[in-house]
Image (cartoon, rainbow, N blue to C red; front, top):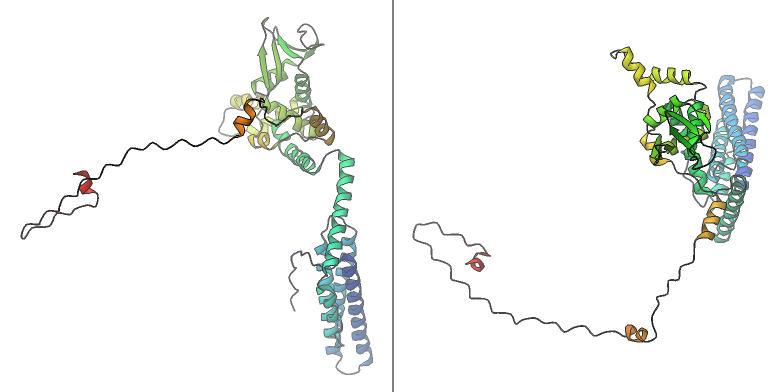
Length: 377
């Protein structure tokens, strides 16, 4: 007999306690039926082959019933599993218990357990279950917010950002040195002057400072991860472009996708651009260039906002008075409805009479007259 298909999750599914109880009773009945079949083989002196086949069939069904009962207990302690999974395991346990009793040739009492699973809940029971479900969801949401500091939409966005980082950071071909250059540019103090890149000690003081790798900075600037703002004295201030900002955030999320050195990063980029039909010099030149970030990653990435940041933004927004201001003299007059202007329409001129259609000549084809043709004459 084929197994019944798993039903979709419905609001009227039995409670987890009922599912666990029914699954345990079904597994027990199946084991008892298998024991009865084995005892029948021991007592019989003739027809042993038939009884042994029945014993093996009942034993196999009892194993399946016990397996679904154990799975129901595992699902009961797993908060990620829906309540419909418990109902499915309980129905499967009852199904195999019925097959075990039928194979053993005993009374099929396990079929009565289906009534417990198919019982329609009363409105009070449904309301109680819905109240308990909402309380459990609120409790889990409070725990998640306390652990992450973000609500559900922002937690999902953070998980999506991590997936994007794991997928696209390795394609950038960056080393950890490229990440350090981007972090320096994010401070707003990275500048290019006299053919050298430096990190200024303070914002606006474009003299001195720590040296930054010229090769990495030039590669990021050529790949448009950095933008240059020309100053009056010839200094170019380097800041992350919109693509560079997203690439920096993704690289910080998944630093395992970065290469340990510039040489290893170059070898990885060379392996990606290597083609048999290309010249060696062209392949090397292509490997020295940093590939851009995938456009889909730029569109899908959004920085998650914590609950504290949301509250701070809400407190900083000024209250707007939506009531319209009106002077005491004109307020009452403006509130009164004004009469609509009388329509000024000229009297309609009567249309000229339509001309009579021509009479067709003998043995001649009549001239067709269109419906709008008289108005054009």
